[in-house]
Length: 355
Image (cartoon, rainbow, N blue to C red; front, side):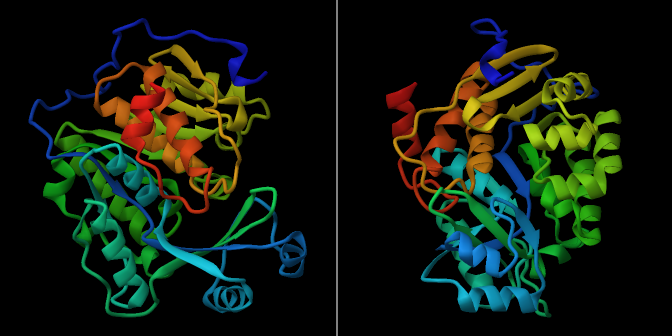
């Protein structure tokens, strides 16, 4: 069944519930969202299927590569566009484009790409104060091959990003944000995983919400027990997934069955369904939206990241679930209409025109 198959929405004016498990603080927030994620510079180039076959790359997939493979692919890629990326950072870029106040925590090295990343994210108005590393490895990069059918094949060298220590966290900054948003990709390496656990403690002690994005099947496969424990313990308030990821999380083949298993474990569950739109389950109440129209799909890089940006923008504004889903679909449609994982159009203007 596609996402349009069943529809139950929050009533007009009905808002999201207060976070389960603890009282949400009434202290005004300085930031709408603070995110912890990989600090990566994206390198995006066109490629054909023959290039993917030559290098044994799975179309549409994401694999981690070592420094040697990263250098090989970079040397054989065509002309490329280089822009700061990373899943959670892309989400913040979208929220900043909607006019929201955001902060980012992530690890770079004091090298050229580290300077590029820091400059780019700060230029968007996003607070970024994490000190740069002075030792190897270098700043992370993601080599993205975009085939003529708009599929993106990502090859990620995590570099310095996987060495984010808990000591690098800005506790006061986390406490000052409405929502702490965690990137599942960064759960894989040990040091940032420990840092994110510490950050969850800071956020919950301050009465703030915690959002988590599952990111990718390979991450879920390795850390399914951890992710289920976070849900069972009530540590996650908003969970972002797509249909494949929620099936991997539950080890079920049918995503509707998977949604039924996970929805009772989290106050807000968001599941994107590609061209079929998206679903939100808020305290057992289901809302859906269709995908926003796109004249031409150019590059699907960042679609999920920007969907989360739109949804979280609506959420911090207190909008109902349907409105949040529509904002997510709008932002995702904009980013897949061009190369790169950051919005190019004025999202506030698009929102005013479309909604």
